[in-house]
Image (cartoon, rainbow over all chains, first blue to last red; front, side):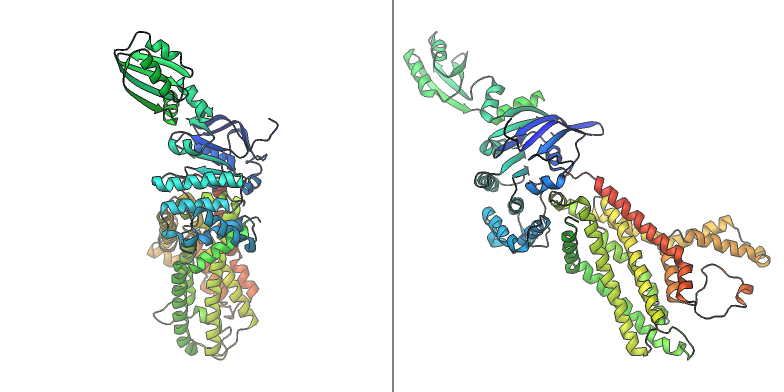
Length: 312
Length: 315
């Protein structure tokens, strides 16, 4: 606890009339990490982000963003944080550059400095050649990229991205994710990213938190969550053999790294921490059993997600 | 002050570049210039050597078919106010710009204040420019320079016009906060305007008839009853800001108006038909002006509070 966390919440709660959108959330996000906020629609991800930005008042509990209380000092928080809303919008009659210029002016940036900052941001998101076109003609993906540029011109210390890839095609989504990862690395920006899309979170996040019905049901690096969720290794290997010898599963179990072995007929289901296919194959052959086929599945967030969501 | 001026300048630039502004401006110019053209045709025959305050007649003289500029203004100002305000908040909300702007370091009220101020200045520029043009034309064509009292009356007229416009704009801004869709807020504001302009006189008449029934025979014998009937009707009419504005305008621009209620013939016998001094005219419409200002402030205050408390959701 000696290093100050960028985001810290203590029992953060938000209820609307009779619904509790966020229930006693305790969260800690360190400087420079990419934190993924996972959860189904309506789990309270956006509400949490809005509370951290000071756009919504929490019902109880406290939040601190870079040492500031968003409810009491919203301006300080907004000065150092960037926010990309889920359905980001721009003034359609203005060009991309004019839209960003408005943001820089709202951030009290002098006009002389602003133009270089804007050019740099447009370069990063790859919109330099359409900078002087009206935003009304932009595609969804371009607007999303402009949204990231809009966040970048503030030179934020941390950034909240609300569903940054929703409604984008895979190619567009990947571009956005690459930009986000690059942004975090090059500018040392802490990123909080909320999403219900697993693969993207898995790709770039250092740590995830799973939010179900306003409650944080799991939190930590993806591998650890996987192990917790499955009670075993990250990999699941399915082996089909013919005429298995009776002590086969015993010899497989003895391989270093194997977590569990289940046997049903000619099939063996093995969970393990690493890809142990060569060792398993050797064990099968050594026990004079014929190997028919072997399949490996990489356990990802999907399983973790399904497990927690069902529990929630 | 954080952000207020930035929002203000941006909104002002938006207004001036919008098609809406060009349409409104050409409409007002067209109406104003044609009204004054007709007024100029008739003004010569009306004015004799002893007529005072000729210059003001530019705004109040009608020529046969066309109503005077004053009547045009009574109709146009609400439309301008509504047009400049009806989508100020909900369009930003539905296009997703509001949450983005509010996540910038500015006070939330800077957004609504900046927008309101920009609308007010836009409207002010429209009105001042048309009145100045009319004044210039009049000066050239009738050749009578305005006296200082006339200049004051015109300035007060402009001020009241802007306050009246501010009322309609704050009403429209309020609806743009209350209703999610721009079409709904525009229609709601226009409905209120139609109600005050066209239905209020009918309702006032009906209510007056109900409270002070007038039969033909009674009315002949009892003038006090007629006066009472008239007073009730006026009182109800004055709930409507349109009436307040109309009465205030007439009193300020037509200095011979000395009372807004009914007068008995015996009261007028010793009256000298000369124009009232500005101070007296102002005294007559002082309640009107304060009510108009109060209505504007109330509307704006409700919008302000509503906007400050509203949840900012992305969807």
